[in-house]
Amino acid sequence: GAVVSQHPSWVICKSGTSVKIECRSLDFQATTMFWYRQFPKQSLMLMATSNEGSKATYEQGVEKDKFLINHASLTLSTLTVTSAHPEDSSFYICSARVPLGGTDTQYFGPGTRLTVL
Amino acid sequence: SQKIEQNSEALNIQEGKTATLTCNYTNYSPAYLQWYRQDPGRGPVFLLLIRENEKEKRKERLKVTFDTTLKQSLFHITASQPADSATYLCALGRGANDMRFGAGTRLTVKP
Image (cartoon, rainbow over all chains, first blue to last red; front, side, top):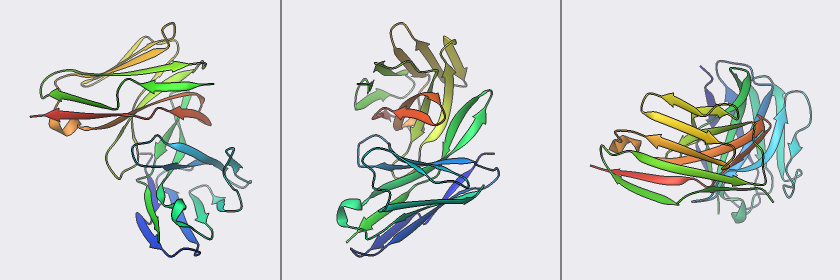
């Protein structure tokens, strides 16, 4: 159980265009999902926390107008990178909060590789 | 400021040996610590969670210890196999909305 999927797994786009990445919890309901980005050989950096039915909470330094997050249902959160630029090229990973024996943990999706030309 | 350090960027060991990875932290009091495995181009996969009041936890060939006095966790893989080669991340947290990741240790098990 607790499977998280992401779509697409990779995407290449031109500079200035917008890209939407979907994150789905397949066999459970996720009231809270998280969006991370990861540069090569670096750790996961939390971008924002997405709560179903409410506005996302962004980490310091993350532009909310550039990285639009929508968590419209208990099984789907989307991240839209607006007006993408080459510096936005990265590996984007979502996760969902999952209860685990009295403690909550996070189960991750497989990630989306974004390349902006 | 809070810091999470994983002992080395890369660790190479021979098949059959025990791999030991270290996660140290400062200026933070986590309620739990987790270890994840990440393969290239993939998202992290949850392995084990250990709480602050637990000293040790095991799962098959994996063993995790958590010393809140030393502010350190050790992650052991016994009888290592080439298939264990991956990057291993430690993550500390006080709740699912508050998890911080180390940079990871890339383990290579040679046949």
